Length: 312
Image 1 (cartoon, one colour):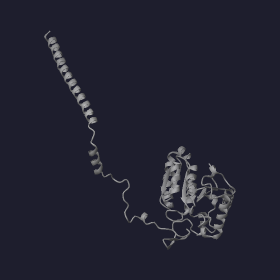
Image 2 (image 1 turned 30 degrees about the vertical axis):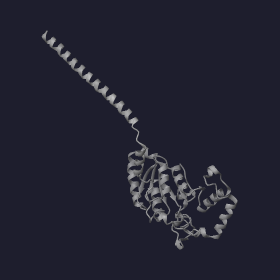
Image 3 (image 1 turned 60 degrees about the vertical axis):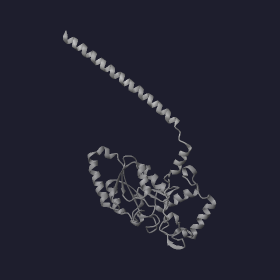
Image 4 (image 1 turned 135 degrees about the horizontal axis):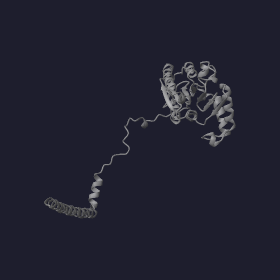
């Protein structure tokens, strides 16, 4: 009985204590609300004087969005070209060798080509400035494609409106996600963008190093043996340049082609620089090494795409 009474008394004491704490918390909350409202009203009523605002604005020194250019910045001393742009060009009165051009053989200075270009502009205008699929195909497109294919000994040639778009769109048209793509590490920017669009499994080998490519292929062969069913469905490509834009080196095509045959790779060559510049008749790296174009799956070049043997 005494135990029960003691327990009841303890509960009553605890209830009274909690009631006092509850009352105290309510009082603190009410005081805080009153203080917050009064402060907010006082802030609304305390508008700074016009004189104070003007003084603050006069003292304010905002940081410039565009920093001052140094006096010796190259853009402040432009160089003026005062001649026709060819293999040589007059810059600020100085006769300079033009190293920023793809006109390696100086053909753009030939009177015959200039006359032909002028005649074409008079007949067709300066061009549609867009893809043929949107703006139409004219007779000279088809004639040039036919003549290019015949010149290169190809089954077919396709002319693009823009050189960069040729390589960057042709690669993802054939190389898809999960395909294996072996690429020289120094390929040009257009190829790099084509590789990005393909979303394939890209493996880079050392520049112009056929042995390094061979090492990658042997390593991949060991992986394929562990996953025979999966590897049988994967397409494999080798993408190189005839003459590399970033280094000027000629690719070792015979060695690379031998590896393609051994490991069953489709080979794509960008001949934007090598086409018209090397080989007995200017047919590019295949003629330079005396290799039939039928052994190359696709040749890409500035403004063109040559397809001798593409199949799936």
